[in-house]
Image 1 (spheres, rainbow, N blue to C red):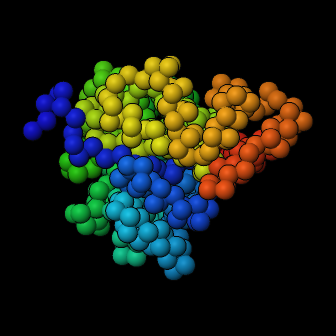
Image 2: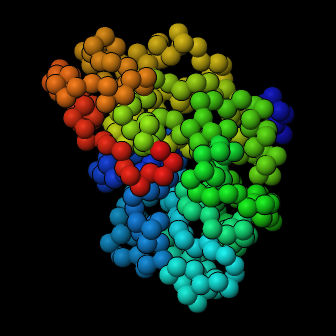
Length: 379
């Protein structure tokens, strides 16, 4: 049995592709999977906000072609020894009461739950995900019974899942950050109690920390989250994601602040990467090392680790360019620079024969491909 000072050796580390925008390609994902395994990750969850089939149009029947695409991705992950997950969001399935007409289900909740069950069966039968991520994040809350309705949806989904499938769910209030109520509506009284009521131990709950984009996870914060949601949180880490209005002009390449308490205070961690698929590999390559070290990350450590990651993922020439000539876009916004300055940086970016996608991502960032997606409501 683990003591409070002993890390859980089964602590899973993975990536959740949960950002807004539609920048990653199927080829990117297939290439990404073996890289993740080589860097010490355990799972990959496919959950882009831009996939309407799993979010905005979740209630429509999946096409055979769509399910086959997910199955190919799932098979590729399993062949590498990674668990594969799918993020499913029954958007607009919550309204004022159990019998109230709700969006595309004028018949009420029974019809909605029937469609939820059918969608989950299709995903389970055809894709066979190891993880089902049921996500109620970033949706408008117009019901005092939101937690109760979401709880019934979760139990409906659990009834459809094999015992071997891990369920991780994200509540609508996945942090105590006041921005969530400001954008999506007031938290109903008793929301967390209603949301997690009688959920089995196998159901994990995502949490982003004290903020939507938390800089760190002190043990006191993790213990507070456990009190709120009734179990250790499964951390959805919004570093290095850059899909918000304020973050879209940044690149977060350095290692994150310390994560040393996560193995003892959380059930696991899912890292949300940047819109720039290839450049995300630089900070992602450092997170397993930081978790294993379980020591604070100093400013000196960050410089050393960034150089180490750049050399591992790129080349000495590219590393020298990034450290000596490229501005630090973690603190400076792309919009601070003129078009001529950005184009000059794009032209000076060294080629990379082994990982051409990294150089291409950087040039595309300079040239404005990765702009803010207006559908990102938490930006």
